Image (tube, rainbow over all chains, first blue to last red; front, side, top):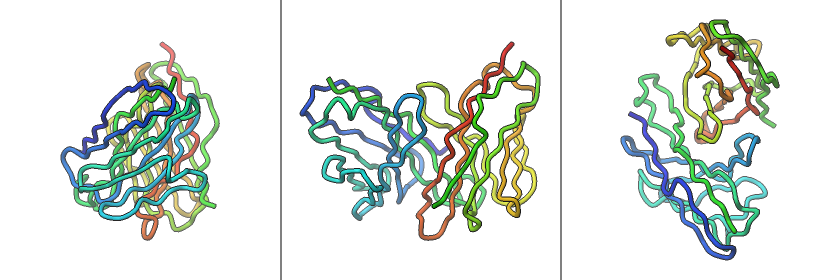
Length: 121
Length: 113
């Protein structure tokens, strides 16, 4: 259990275009998902917290109009990078917060998708 | 400011040795503690979670938590070259933070044959 998928795994686009990345929890419902970005040899940076049925909460310094997040169902969150530029090239990773009973611990846990490598030319 | 600090590494151990990874956190009300393993170019994978003081063992991995000292560690016994990765310590306060994890910068482990 606790599988999170992301699509696409890799995308190359031209500067100025928009790219949509999907994050799905395959075997559990996730009211909360998270979007991270990671540059080479750097640590994870949380971009935003995505809550089903409500607006995402963005971290300081992350442009909400550039990184559009939609969490329309309990198993799907999307991140759209609008008007992408070369500096947006990065590894984008989502995670989903599991219900307390899923892992048998009584606590929520967070499982990551495989990531999407975005290259903007 | 919620901080999670890990020993900077890189850590290099021979195959079969015990690798010890350490992590301290600043927020005393933290409730949940996790270790993730991240291979180069891949996303993090949850390998251990611990919620109460003491030790938790899972195969070759043992997590240790000491809330009084705000310290959590991960021991890897009989280290294998396949354990070579970056290990991320993560802490969750719970409550209103909606499950947000605070990550350390990671410790890079190399296990040489």
